[in-house]
Length: 456
Image 1 (tube, helix red, strand yellow):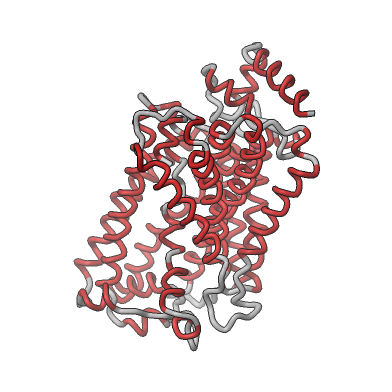
Image 2 (cartoon, rainbow, N blue to C red):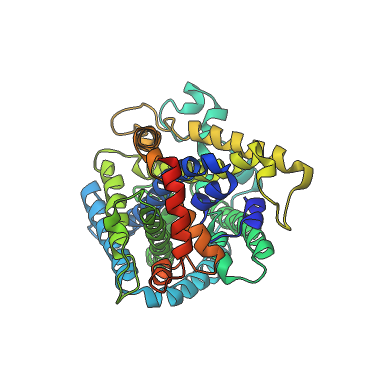
């Protein structure tokens, strides 16, 4: 991904990369499929983050109170959180920059301080053998390590790590705002993974070493092991304070996930993949309000199965991971198949490029299968992993619609690519439309129309 970002430092992300890397005759098809899987992943990421926050709020509310967490109450909290994110993304675009700065501080200093405090305050600590060499199933009785194998359970357990490091394209979205983007953007991709690995590993170790009573932690009445660890270490009041810090961090994540989600939908609607109704930027608030609320609505709908499912969060994260990684994998696969179709940037992998790209594609194929499999035993209506349903619907629609009608008119992000090369900041909603008004993209439209006529 870093190599692709270096070669194509466009702020458009995977949807654009697929169109730019593929041969011209296949560019529209590649961007169409990539765009729909990216849309699925974006919606599911918003669902996973914000629904997870709703569960954290429900869990924390049970401490020192008579509150009882239910699926209905959690979905109500979830709706309120989505509403807060949608309102800010609709009418508070001007404060997003400041909220981003506060998010950086909270995630770095706040979570780092929490990890240190947990280690320092814990009355006793577990030994290294417990932390690094203890295998716990926790998937039912009998668990999947017995019904299938420990390897199966471990593979399914990769989900949270894989989900955590989604967002490879984030650095690319800011490439237009950075100097020497062909170098800085790929380094941003690599650095983000490295920093996530180091800080995430430190936080996990801090929590695991600080477990006071393992059986009580995993079967806690609170329903959330991390909350139970904090209660055991800091007491109820201290746990509530630290859980509040965590929840504020997650709220920021959900906010900016919806920002990215709505921008992607806006770009997709600009090319006609979504109804033209959504291709509008509010002149007063400079926000694609219609796609903001579309993102909120779809994210809410994706969490509705939680009313009858105990694995809704795991399913949402599975859908998000599969959707986003397929949208990452398509440009990588194109680069593997057509290595001479683009000019590599200053950051490249040399002769190892195709080999590493092939491994990446195979890994994405593997996790796409494994994350669709059940993780709880026995498999019932409550524990069924509904990931294959959501992914299957999008796959069926994306491929079916292409061959039935979209191939006759969809040209991909040709206008935006040309506009970006002409200096238009396409990542900013409304920038392209402003360029249209002053006649800066007349030649681009002529090119697009000629291309569409050729396809017809």
